[in-house]
Structures are given as structure tokens and as C-alpha cells.
Amino acid sequence: MSQRRLLELADEVRSIAMTGLHYSENSFDRDRYERLLKIAAATAGLGARELDSTSIESIYRSADLGYVTPKVDVRMGVFRGDEVLLVREKIDGLWCMPGGYAEVGDPPSESAARETLEEAGVEVRPTGLAGVFDYRLQPSAPPHVFHIYKLVFVGELIDPNAQPSGGDETSDAAFHPLDALPGLSMGRTLGIHIDAARRTALDPGARPHFD
View 1 (tube, rainbow, N blue to C red):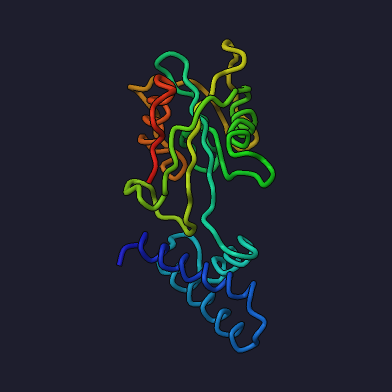
View 2 (view 1 turned 180 degrees about the vertical axis):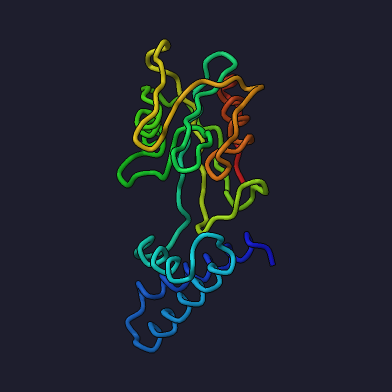
């Protein structure tokens, strides 16, 4: 069984266990859900390369309270001519569209705009939705312990002459030619995300991608 499939199955068992622990008051049922959570962590430990089952169980317990749902990641596509704005992640040294997990209390497009300001140092105005992508349906995306929905937006620079710069989590930010992209941080941005954003930027009436 592949690493990806092990992590996917573990995450499904985790969601059942955590949701059950939230709602169940029966001690016997809670014991069963606790056991399920440990099984999920052990399974994920077989698929994860850098984390053991104890570390994964701690991540699982702290990730969700209540009914467990997929994570929501937001990304912003910003273009200047035939170039796209990318930021360089400190964690892996690779490039991606600015973004991250959506913040509670923010509309998704505003979360993407805020992340762009924090990671690239430029203000943008969201203008459209390029697509909603299921992380697990993208074969080129590396395996991940959580199920993620990725919302890709398109935005315009409020100051067309603004010069991007890195932030706390990024070491650099710059516009890159679409035909000469640097190495992408594949867990954050895939070529299909940039293509969808570009299509929407060129044609605001284009139908967003959905899985």
C-alpha cells in the first residue's frame, strides 16, 4: 500500500475517532474511540517519513475539536503581464503562490489577500475564484496527514508598481515568468493551480475548477 493511501486511511479513521470523542458520553464508546485514534496514528506512522506515531497522535489531538472536516487552504494568484507572483518558503526553500490555512472569522478571499500581504508584502484586491481543488485528487501533490481543500483566488495589485518582499515565513517574493517557473513547493502550489488562476485572470467569466 502506498504512503499516500496509508495517510488517507489514517486520516479517515482519525476523523471518526475525534468526532466520536467529541459527541460520546458513554465510557465504553470513548475507550473504543481512543483506541481508534491510536490505530490511526500508528497507521499514519507507517506512511509518514519524518514523524513517529506518538508525534502524529499529538498532532491529531490538537488539530480539531468537534465534528472533524477537511482543512481549508487558500492561495492567491497575482499576475503582472506574463509573470506570476510567488513566495519562497523558508521551510523548504521552494516557491508557491502566497497563502495558507484560512483563518476563522475571515472570508476565504480576505484570508488569501491577508496572506499575500504577510508573505509577499503587497496589497491585493480579490477579483475572482479560480477553483476549489481536493488535495488528494492531485497525483503530483505529496502525501499529507490531513485532507485539504485548496481554494485558489485571483487578485489585482492595489498599487500596480508595488515591489514584493519576503515576510516572516518566506525568505523572498518575486514575479516569475510563466514559462520559466522556479521549483514549486508541491504541497502548497501545483502547476494546475497557477494555470487555473491564469485562466481566470485572463477571462473573469471563466467557470472555476471544481473536483
